[in-house]
Length: 70
Image (cartoon, rainbow, N blue to C red; front, side, top):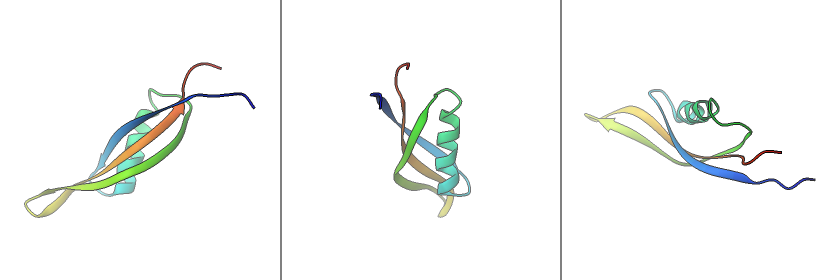
């Protein structure tokens, strides 16, 4: 097994409908510019509230990807 190095970044995804969609949006957006994504860990969930109503779901995601070339 070869040795590998992974970098971890923190992202915040948003969605008007659910935390799951918020997390998915974060990962799918990152995948447009990052390669070899490995693990996504949801570290925090919260909501934006305006006038007593939930207007957005937010998911904080730690995302790891392979760092460097093979």
